[in-house]
Length: 151
Image 1 (cartoon, rainbow, N blue to C red):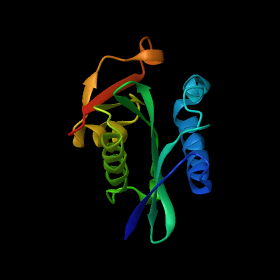
Image 2 (image 1 turned 180 degrees about the vertical axis):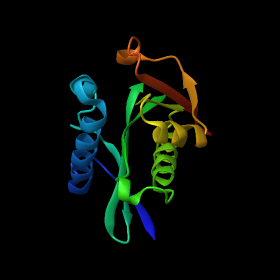
Image 3 (image 1 turned 180 degrees about the horizontal axis):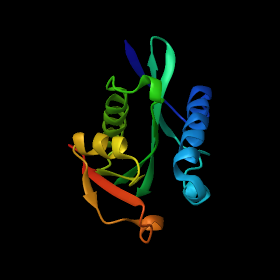
Image 4 (image 1 turned 60 degrees about the vertical axis):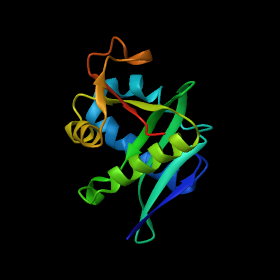
């Protein structure tokens, strides 16, 4: 059984999961890690979801305003041992509901082209590919998505 808890970036379990995420991404991104890391600081994120599986932190995600009407999905992570149980979809859906409750019209996000599981997750959940935005415009290894929220 799992539960999703809405919190912010001061949450200890969120910080622990983000540390795991950063170590995981460092192994995947190699020399590019520092470039992407600069856009993923967690200071002052007001909208964080931590998913608990049997009382233990098992995944996280966050949203932060990108521009009026648009939330950017950040710091999505489920540790490899907990994958394949629908946890990432549950986190993503909770973030989307929260964004809609706050009056946002869509969510956008960036992931790496070497992250096929993440790309599949977003496509499965109704995200469509868009041109790279913001700091990712000229980054060949970035893949960007958006989803319009029901409101």
